[in-house]
Amino acid sequence: MSKPKYNRVVLKLSGEALAGEQGFGINPTVIKSVAEQVKEIAELDVEVAVVVGGGNIWRGKIGSEMGMDRAGADYMGM
Image (cartoon, rainbow, N blue to C red; front, side):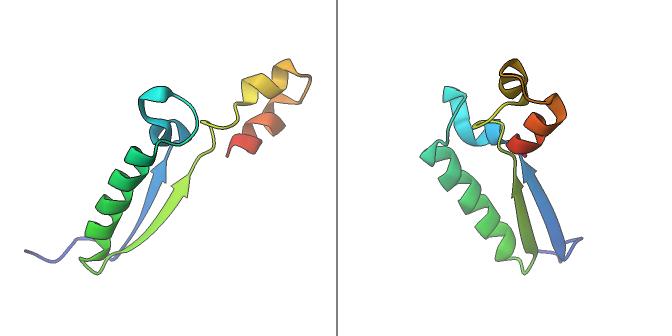
C-alpha cells in the first residue's frame, strides 16, 4: 500500500451519528464500527484525533425552550 497523504487527521463526528438509527444516546454497535475504522487508520501510522459532538445528548433548541440563551444552549451540545 502507498504512503498515506496525511500524517495526522481530525475526525469530527456528530453526536447524532453515534446514536445510530435510534436518534439519541450512544449506540454500542456504531461506536465499535467507528473504533475499528479509526484503528485501521492508526495502523497506517497516521495520528487520529476524534472530536465528538453532543447533539445526541443535548440540543440547543431544548434549552432555548426552557429559557436559556440559544447560543449558550447550543454550546452545551458541543
